[in-house]
Length: 107
Image 1: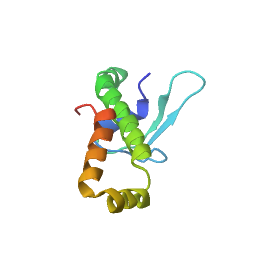
Image 2: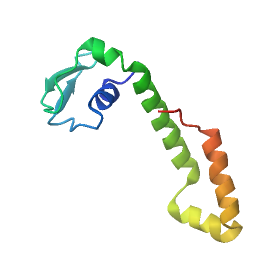
Image 3: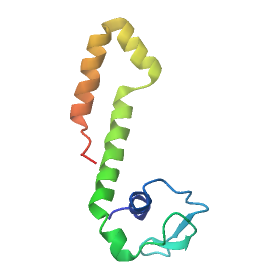
């Protein structure tokens, strides 16, 4: 199921403060908007949020791809060590192979 928070991020065009502006709740079922304090746009309807499902899914899939990439890249220290031992071109090739392995969807 697509994350409600991601639909809200897309609806607003930014990440709101989920502790003050938009408060979500779940009482054992689906997440819902408990409080809407964002002043830049009115509270969206369920239909408006549902229309954003495919964009929210892309956002979620890209976040997973980025997390997988970061895990494989390793720490900054290990990347510098890689460059030092194998050279910048080898590092660029390695980075590109990781990006190919975990592609991001077009947003």
